[in-house]
Image (cartoon, rainbow, N blue to C red):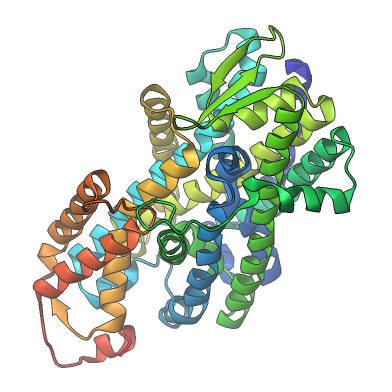
Length: 509
């Protein structure tokens, strides 16, 4: 597909998003930006959350990673199911009972000022890095298939990518996000379905034969029972459950959408519907990964070496020379180099929709948390000044995302899906420990010591992940260990206290 045509399609796509922004921002105020006026239909949020959760990382990295890790990522997805059940039945009732704008306000009610600020800062760090890595993939795709042709520097591509998000989110925030995410989820799921169809046509396979091809492939093996490996089933399953709890239930970005529902019952229906849809969406991506590798090997486009680690060689469509590539690069190179214009269009719309559905919600969640949790917006009364500050924060966080993306591009070349989940283990673990300790104990803590406890737990977890314990190597379950270390540290600085009226409303026996 010609870069000019791709750019034209991209401009049209973002024109639709900006049009939605203009429509949803009419008569908007601060409450519209932060809570969507709490009148969004649950089914709309559930569908739109698919795009926010999957992101461009899943669209590119999960199918590509099938070549080296088979279906083992599905073990994480199974863990997600347990995590989302806990969110719907434990966390959501508390959030709605307390009528929170930012979910980290709970920590102030339960523990005090420093715990509140610590939780908010860990979220800001977690989501800023995670959203930036997701957006990095979209920028990489745009660079390779559009802007490299015109010699545009990667930094300019990144700047353009972030600027587009800012343009359609700075007015109405979560009110806009709910609707744009729904549109982007349509493009995302359409992209993967069309990709599967086009590859199956190339392989002369009908629907039943596609299912048989995936099922019979060695790449579709799910379970890993070697306890020493990071992909061991219980590591992935437990890690997936707690990653879901932390990256969704303890994440302002994701909970902000749920808190914009009309009632707790609607929010719970949203979460259950979202869980079922996400389960099958991930199966689609993994199945696509099998087809990508089967087609590539049958056509002589790729060669896979597994004798000494994993190496993927790809035949350059222009030169015919085999070159080593990362698994993240395989799907885009195949779509644009060998599968024709329809596949290229499906890919570009799918990955852009997935990435921007995640990044735009993240930017809105970051802005909400910084304004409410760090700047104390609720104590201000001047609406004009609040609007100016909120827009300034939105812009500053957009610039911060640019810096993180460029730093990652310069320093790292690992599969982004693994990087995102690894970072989550270190940054969301303290949030898990804080909320678990608050919900399941009646003890009070020396609040000023909380930052030290949380940072120490993250540092120890990082060291253990790097070194392992004997033959045991930690995987995604490191988030649970991090949470346990945090909770243990909080216990060490705690004291038993008679139940107060405030604690009685926020703690769970």
